[in-house]
Image (cartoon, rainbow, N blue to C red; front, top):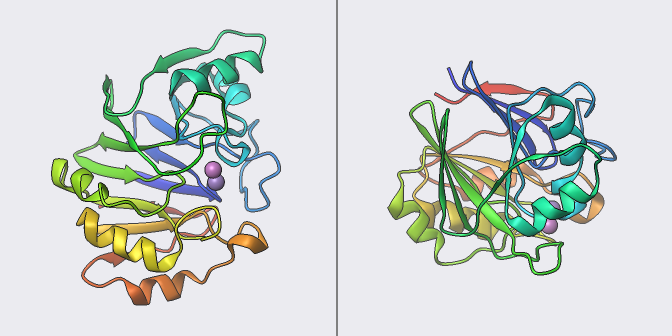
Length: 223
Ligand code: NI
Ligand code: MN
């Protein structure tokens, strides 16, 4: 069983029963957060870019639980600078594939600013437990999402829908089509007023793909 737990905003955990993968662990100061950075457990941390609402508590969590951090080199340098203890780092960049004990992580483009000098924002394709998960990170709609969907058959697309800082519901619905995703999970909305959004309005725009609206603190099985 592959479990998806949503911790609020854009932070989630994948758990295949053996390995835990924490993504964009913004918990301190996250009004939606349902777990303290002191309590979260993980083996790997994936960071899409260096904005505070994504990099978040990654350095402190990584050193506390001895997790490996997967990110671009510029983001890893920033993480390292924030803590005394060494961080186990897996530097990679756009287009790269990393084989890990639980499966595969590919770093794919995102259309967004990076939050760190010389950096670039990214998304991830994660292959775990026989499933292919695409997490877009913060991004606008871009036509090369079609290539991501052609390269891998996407079981679950995890997409921002909040608008303002990322694509909103119309463009996210278009992204679902380009990706040819079987299922979609929206996030990055309703954390603050600027990204308020009704996920049921998003659901109405999506046809032929199952939409899972997951509440902060909720866990679902990715079947
Ligand atoms: Ni951002
Ligand atoms: Mn963001």
